[in-house]
Length: 141
Image (tube, rainbow, N blue to C red; front, side, top):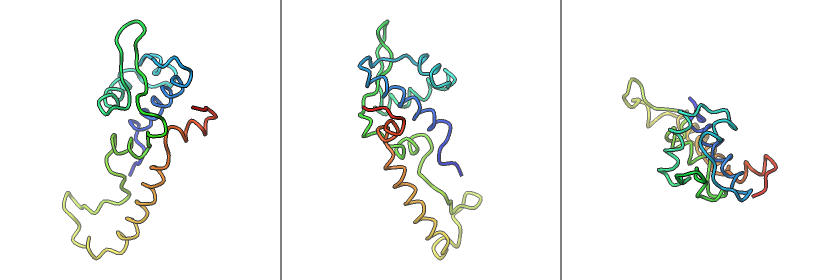
């Protein structure tokens, strides 16, 4: 069980990098600059940035003064949404056994408790936005 995969971690770090750049007024940043600053392998980062672009988190501009920039405001970018984008639903417990639903699924008391925990975890990740992380870093946007 992994809630934060490498893809999600790299996406958050790249978006934070772009959010900090946006604050400075010079919004455009190349994928190479993000890769270097965040120590993320460039080819891996490009794949993640393409997904973020397709989902409307960032935009790109060609040319010498081009690059990438954050489109969504940091207050609207939730870690829970990024987890879902790169990992799928937030699950702690999977009621599957060899690709079939567990026969005890409807009567399982543990499952009921775990579903409550999953909801709490999902809510907590939903409260973490890029802005919250920037505030934690001491960066004001």
